[in-house]
Image (tube, rainbow over all chains, first blue to last red; front, side):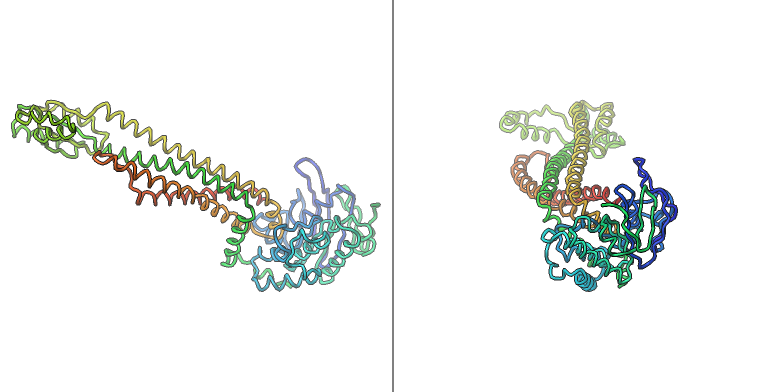
Length: 228
Length: 308
């Protein structure tokens, strides 16, 4: 599913963010990516959805080698994964429905299919009744649920989340985590970078800890392992 | 669950074209002031280009008619009899640069002179009894710029009393026409590129404001062409909307100007271009220019943001 071999990433300004990572994540796994700020978590996550390209090494996701993927093939690759961000990245001028439908419109799905799928995922995140509202009329937790709905609307096999609860209060964070659990239970791989000690230590899953651009720890049902 | 990828199709569907058109119109509405600024930039530059274009085309027309009218007047020596005149005519016709030779008897010359002098010309009627003028050959050359060359050759022939072709004037005129044409082309090109620069900058600002939108589109797997289309159409609409006012203004102004100037030119050989079809040609050109400027401006600006 996801395989990284001898991955290095050095930015043009000379910063070495990733210094040799080898890792394998299987289909259906739930993986937390933890580590101190500036340890390389973000780069690790960004390389998975091909926002960053490794300086050397190979990253294979769903059979595509991201290190060698042509620019023109990147959109097709991204259609097979969902990405959730800390700041939601919703389009402020579109309604909730339009924001979620957007991910299907760009792949030119049929209107019938779009409507059906959007309603399905809105049901899953529990916001079916707010589809006509604008993102600005929703709370942070609700906005994040919309962003999750958008990430899974095209039925990806992999969902990548970059600190999805970073901007949310504890109660809301738990609600969001319930949705990710549900997505994972349906067979979708979830890779989540997080700083939330409580969540990692309570909802036990595989934990990959990154320090200094290397994997410091990789444990099934692991602990967060840092003081917040 | 895995229905979606079957939907991926590289051929753009009619539905998608409809979506792009809707999106582009929505965005024009949403970007209120920026739309206004872009349209304003197109309008102002097209007015300048349009006015200049109209003036230049008319100058060209005037220059063409003047060129057409350049002729050599060969005064025939009074000593020449009918045979000599015929022989001279044949010799002039044999000059390679010459297109036509027309004989104008001295009676006709006097009549023309009297007419051209108006009221004062009546005094010349006295000469009808004893006409002091020469018979004249009016010679036209195939190419107006060969006038001087042909005139020099005619001068050397026998029975030629005098050759007149307004040497200095013709030379100066041709120089002026050539210069004004070059200046005109340079100015129009300059204005055209200024317009593109202005508009691509304005559109760039609207696009910078929507960088986030483009980034999100890229992240959910939109292809570059899918992202580019609405911007492309938006540029097209902006250009077309921006060309409407210049077309109307230039239409009204040219209609008025033509009405005002045209009667004053009756009786001269100078003509300006008639409103129909000239205005429609100008309107078409301005519309195309607006569309081109708008599309180019937006395509150039959006290109930058597609490398995420």
